Image 1 (cartoon, helix red, strand yellow):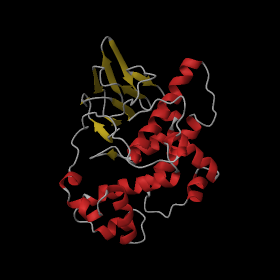
Image 2 (tube, one colour):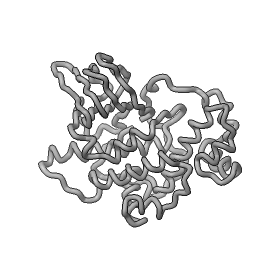
Image 3 (cartoon, helix red, strand yellow):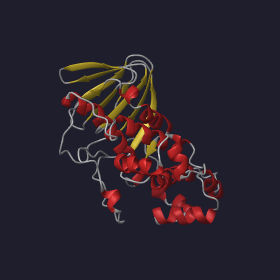
Image 4 (cartoon, one colour):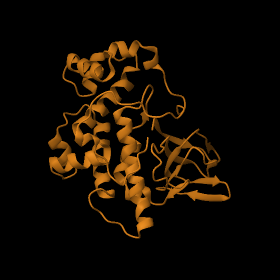
Length: 287
């Protein structure tokens, strides 16, 4: 996933985006038309379409939607397309809080924050889809409850990245122990809570640095660093450039008008811990 944004559609307006598409209707209604099929997508419903499915999404009335280029990275267990999930918003209120609070735009490469963001959405989609096939809904800590709590924490971090977040504070937010929260984060995102906090802060910093009127000092404090030096070290470690050099690089300043062309994720150059490499055995990776 390289982009996720919220958009108001006027009545009869169409949502036209290339490639794979995930849409969540927040209010209003849209009509989804595919070959030989026509469905109405209501508030709280979500739909996932792969890049090969010809479709048309038209707003029936003024409609508020969130949409992104979510797609499967490894089609070992292909999902149906279109995949319409009724009541997605009710099942995953934490995910709804996250996607309405934190837009996403990845300009250069798919970073850890974007990958973890997509993993949360993918896990939430599977947690609703699988029970329909199994005839049951077992909550083993990897299902909707766990996802919702992780998403609630990520939404809080995205809303207030400059707050003095600690692992204890994150765990207390969703009434979990430090170890339980860490384990749920690793299952849902592949990363620890503190690593996710760093990614949220870097994501916010990149957005602020595109605003030329903001001093780097202001950006540093806005994203939770106590000094420009500490922020510069952290930023350079992740990006290979200082905040000021990143701001002046043409590729860094480029904005995304639409979804970038789909491409495979770039290989990681850093070593990950064994815990970071573990994934749910039944998960379908998405990007």
